[in-house]
Image (cartoon, rainbow, N blue to C red):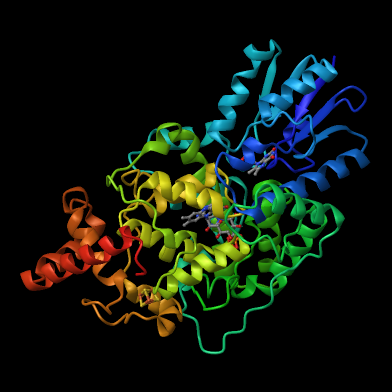
Length: 512
Ligand code: FAD
Ligand code: DLZ
Ligand code: SF4
């Protein structure tokens, strides 16, 4: 008996379930770089080079551990171009008795895998992805009897189940959540530590050259390239985060500073999502730092909540709601994604900064994704399919299971409130409070109307006015609707006219 064990680009963990019980003498480990995965959406160049290099390094480690690895490089002349084609080729070459694969991170890939049993007339075992702390079934059990799903309650269950930041059966410090302590605005002279920059070896250089050649027209800068591509490097990046950034992670979690793309965030999502790090080990390191007195509770709790709370929660929602999730559009948003998301010129400094940093780094931190890029997409009424595609393309950590709930659920309210209790719409004031972007902007954040007023200000009210029928019944929006309804006709018509003028210019690809 021999098995063909397929390791996908986000399965790069030595303890992955598809390697369990492997017969090193007879089983074949298949890994493949395929054009279909690189182009079904046109991923950022850095994302592709990162994944290819991490895959090649992982394959090398597997070989060193005695596995038989069949690795297809993208430029192999025999490359069949897709997972299905490569599995077919491996079956012809090795005649395995069965195929084993860990549950994939995208519904599209799951569908392809589910077709292999009949296509190849071989048993296919799809194993649980045990790197996640909550299985898909466990999430559905948790969700099934609830009218409304809320991350906070799910998160508490996870804390208890894994005994993380617990004091017997009570939350450490007496509170489950220290979010209110995590919203400090940036103070003058705030010093941000330099981010981890890995040196690249010949394998990474080969991937950079390959991507520059084959994906030349894709969005994004390929160099400089500083991602960790091995577990050893990713562990180093983790340690560096724990010592240098975690202590202030909580305080400045929501801050944005001109020219500071990394802030006090961990920049570990790429490594966790592709498997170089596991979520549990990252969380345990953060808890250890807190227990050793090296990080305050608000920082450790805030960080841990993102991983065992949000990360697991969005995955649960994705698998519970797919495939219909991809088509949801509660607010019937239909505007085309403006060119400025691809680097087109804009006078809005916040958007310009966030897009430029995304282009350079294949990374933007959470508050940039949520409050600038996402908030604008929401209040400008951009088509969820196009917004989802953009977010899947541009970030090196983007896989559909995590990207789609954040986009359709968290920023666009396209699911009508399944993931979050209200749309995350905000005017320019919030961006001004949490960043220094407005100081260098052509628009005036303090002005509410007129050609030089911050567009976020009137688009915000125009959004609530446009969607009054769908949103007014939401108790969390009572305050917003009370304020809107107190506005006199003159004010309301100024908002409508400014929004119409701005959105027409946006649609005409004028520089706004
Ligand atoms: P940190 O701020 O240091 O957070 C620590 C870790 O918590 C992250 O590494 C990540 O694993 C996890 N995390 C934090 N927030 C979330 C969240 N909302 N959902 C899931 N995990 C979370 N994250 C992705 O991994 N891939 C995506 O494609 C992605 N798309 C997003 C799209 C939008 C519109 C928004 C608002 C958020 C998105 N996120 C995504 C979540 C979050 O922005 C990123 O995980 C985070 O910015 C990664 O940077 P970091 O590692 O420095 O995170
Ligand atoms: C994103 C991506 C890219 C660009 N290329 C590959 C690839 O060549 N081979 C591979 O195994 N995976 C790749 N991936 C990740 C997949 O598109 C997909 O997200 C995961 O396989 C889902 O588990
Ligand atoms: Fe962004 Fe408005 Fe501030 Fe300009 S003024 S940076 S558009 S929030």
